[in-house]
Length: 116
Image (cartoon, rainbow, N blue to C red; front, side):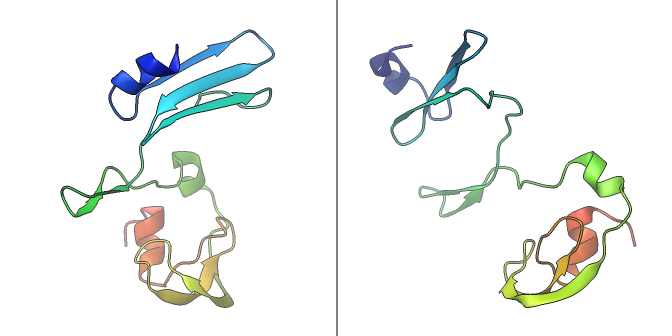
C-alpha cells in the first residue's frame, strides 16, 4: 500500500505482504514505518501500554508473559545488580532466573499471575 494511503489511516493500522522469502510490513505510527525482513513475520501481534498525551496517562494492555511461561516450573528469585522492577517500576535487586526479569518479592506472584 502506498505511503500516502497509509498516512490517511488511523494510528496502529498496518498492511503486510510476503512473497515466500521476503516479508514487508508498513504501519502508521507517528509517521509511516516500513520494515522488510527475510526472517520475521507479522505474527504474533499484540497491544502494549503507551502514554497518551491527551489523557495524560498510560493506556492499553500491559504485556505479560505467555501462558506457557507462567505454568512452567523453575521460576525463583535470585540477587542481581540494582535495576527497575518490571511490575512496579521501583528499584530492586532481585530477578526471576527463568524469565530474566527484575522483580520484587511482592511483585513476583503478580507478574506471574500466581494465586497466593
